[in-house]
Length: 413
Ligand SMILES: Cc1cc2nc3c(=O)[nH]c(=O)nc-3n(C[C@H](O)[C@H](O)[C@H](O)COP(=O)(O)OP(=O)(O)OC[C@H]3O[C@@H](n4cnc5c(N)ncnc54)[C@H](O)[C@@H]3O)c2cc1C
Image: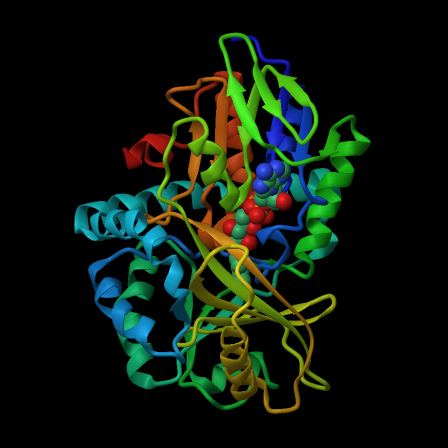
């Protein structure tokens, strides 16, 4: 199939990265977003290129913990009551993904992407001259108790080690040496020396968008209504006009679910909302992202202040923010850095989350002119560049760097 003009729907970090790879490969590319680039979930993340994250969430041990966590108002997991019916298809597939064979396959699939994240992210950082937005200080994940740390050492952390992740166990004193301003609330934790982070997720998106437009790419600010592929082209209906492309890539994050439904493709993706608060921490500072893993919060030192990010709230994307989520997070930050913190700004957004923790990448079986890149859950920043590369290979009809079967939309049928 000859493909010249590609339309990318969604200018989040995934759509932008895809646009850069396609442009580099010589295609004429138009990005369409209802907002300015990078203003969706990509705006609000914790900034980590989380190269260590190679374990799916779905496993029976997690499933057993979930009801208790949902009932505990102080836990990082919560649900908007009226969202329950939307969670049912996700829940059924989540249970299926918990079976040991599926878990092992999921681990292998995440690893297969992670093996290419550093190189592909670096390729785009170099291309767009965005290296100045990146820090290479590693990251820390801490545990409140010796018991919790010991359990992780023989569990998840051991699994990561077996997957080849570079990690070191640190006691409380060693953590203090790395981050002297942290309070003494923990029993030590894990240090990932190779993990990098960005000091401004939005500036990174802007940098990518600027490079794209400076090199002939076009960005249209408009809302996609429907996508209509036929044998020769793909029509994209916008607010008051129709755009035509040879092929289209759907990268609209959580909204991809709705757009795919109009194409007859169902995906059990949910809106897993996360929050962030930008904090003024006075004289206290950190050199790297620090996670309190029992509470599922991360503090990341960013350009505009300390970003406190976390929580997993299953809720409608457009529901008003739940103040309790932010309040709980702030309590944890005060334990980590002391009471002298003030809030500069707050944000909530939807992670596009799939039941098996794997993104959806590649061509749609039913519509070969439509490619997809969405559903990256907690790892969209990390996986954006490799997703763009894989979609580009798929459009070029080249052999794929990564086997795309585990990421097919059809796996949910
Ligand atoms: C609190 C929090 C912390 C996180 N921390 C990390 C982290 O440290 N590391 C990491 O790798 N990931 C992290 N993530 C996940 C990551 O942010 C997401 O996976 C990623 O941003 C998804 O990118 P995306 O481009 O798919 O979606 P988005 O950024 O949401 O982009 C989708 C775009 O589509 C547009 N759109 C939607 N519908 C339409 C339409 N109909 N017409 C036109 N445009 C449309 C939107 O305006 C938006 O710009 C975190 C997420 C949260 C919430």
